[in-house]
Image (cartoon, rainbow, N blue to C red; front, top):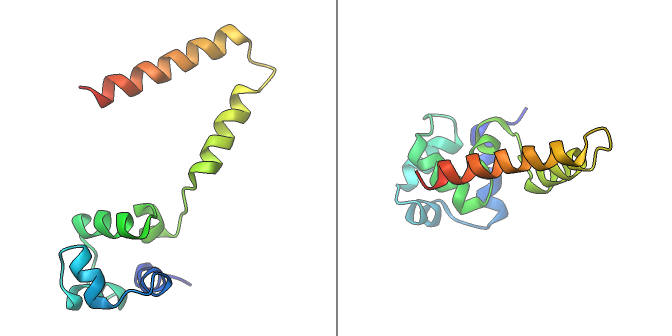
Length: 108
């Protein structure tokens, strides 16, 4: 079973980074990265975000192995809005609510 450390090591090897390179890129130490990879230390939130950005994966993937692929999300949204059991007016109202909530949150 894969755990946080194994996923981190696998990602580092996939990108062909050394421990030192990863540490430099996320402003940490090679020792800390090694301890994360060997499950000797829990990853802190700042390092989690930096590593997820470095490896272009979600924090959920690093922590739980859950890959939140945006194309799957987009497909689900498209399928929902293509549902013939929902009339156009309801779809339009829902879309407007989503859009308003997004912009309200983004620009608050």
